[in-house]
View (spheres, each protein chain N blue to C red):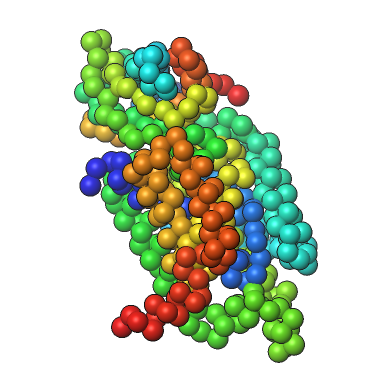
Length: 295
Length: 126
């Protein structure tokens, strides 16, 4: 496999984590434009733990996921009381606040004679864990795909469980779910924390893949795309967001068919889907149809 | 005496480690075709040219690095020691994070921020 294909596949994998985090909130009935903030929290935290304190990547990833979960839980406490568009706007505001905080974050220490750590708008260089440990790009791709497979397996287990039915119930008819004794706020806070952890995991992997991060990596574009991937791919299954990422990054970016017009095609695709298939290509009806026909 | 020597070693260790980090300088000239640049990379370590390194050059847009990037190109050796040449085909003008992935005798990745305009590229410092 050549370097370019490995790069495109790794990017598909990395985007999938943040797209799945947006999907999780969508299933619970919430539209978030702010998942890039928790992706950023994961990237910065993971980078700080490995590059500045020499933690192993798995431990740094677990710590970053915990911070991501905590961050989205704390953001969710006041914002999940809002409904619909107001919640979406509050997530966007929170994400912009996070990005500005990353711009103000100057926290460096000398590691091996070099100043390492976040340096505001200059970014955070030298996140070299994969180079220091001799991990080749193909091995890193394997790591990303492996973790994505574990996350997907978790999604499928949840979707087939009582918890999955509760989540869809909360997302599709919160009043009915509340009348059945479900604590809506508690469920949504749990979903928010899980989504934060998932986005943070993507962030840690991104920071170590790129070796450099900066606040602009976590701006509104990433949030809009992650939401769009879930909406294009479909809300019927966790494969939906993956399909959305594969369509954009894999088909459009990978093939470069439309080259300069890619964003116009992407925007058009989102608009068409919202008109003709508002719950995406793999919506609940399509998933039921496929399940009835597949062994 | 031993104490002084040990102190000196500990003081020098960080400097030695710093000396091991490769440094790169990039010069790009527009080819005349839209957004295509001929670039020269000068790679060094501790002030000495680094030769025989396999450099794969890519570029990302900082605001959307995973989606807007260029196809990585393998740089070829230039005429001077530590000099490498590569052609960059970007999507648009503006700031790009040029990513140099080093292989062979040195394994590292360097990210250089440059502002690309109709004539060439200049380092971007925010």
